[in-house]
Amino acid sequence: EPEVTQTPSHQVTQMGQEVILRCVPISNHLYFYWYRQILGQKVEFLVSFYNNEISEKSEIFDDQFSVERPDGSNFTLKIRSTKLEDSAMYFCASSVGQPYGYTFGSGTRLTVV
Amino acid sequence: QKEVEQNSGPLSVPEGAIASLNCTYSDRGSQSFFWYRQYSGKSPELIMFIYSNGDKEDGRFTAQLNKASQYVSLLIRDSQPSDSATYLCAVNPANQGGKLIFGQGTELSVKP
Image (cartoon, rainbow over all chains, first blue to last red; front, side, top):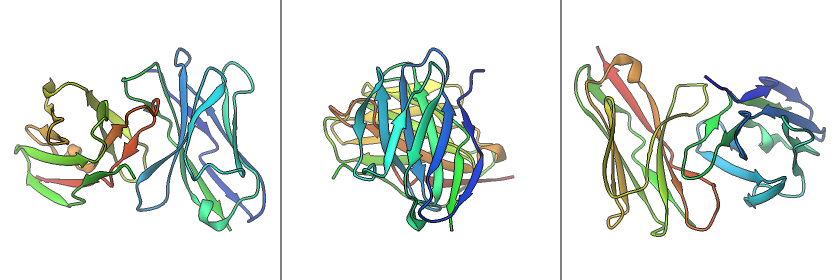
């Protein structure tokens, strides 16, 4: 069964450092998303991406965040200057369209120290 | 602020019983509704989606939608210990592309 692949599975970084989280969506999917889940809390929407541009973003997705699809397969989330409160599980997801549900990747656990 | 509300549980049912999970949402224009299962430390896994009023069945799972009451539910028949997980309700609000708003999740425990 096709999968959404995320790397790394766990990243530890110092406060103020830049991190890039990587995702390979399912190949025939057209819509891409990043979500995060702080431990014990809800899954929160960050950003959606379609046709090589951001289609929606949340209040969380401020100037410290950016997304990119540098080639035909990868989809990345960059956090420019990490804060302690950015510590969370970050999930990439993709879908073939709406209203079909997403397939989530296995996540990257980001720990900011 | 668009909200999705679930009872956090834990909901405990014996093996073989029917588990009933409920969700309410605030945005009356919401288009589609999803149930995800999340095991501890893992990513959400899609169980099913529904976008028309009424029932939708898939194996042991039935989703029910009542847009007038802004209510969606998930029934799990013949519950198994392997169904023990957190069940997340997610809603696609109107005019927000594919964005999903998730509820807090209901923790289900199926006792052998």
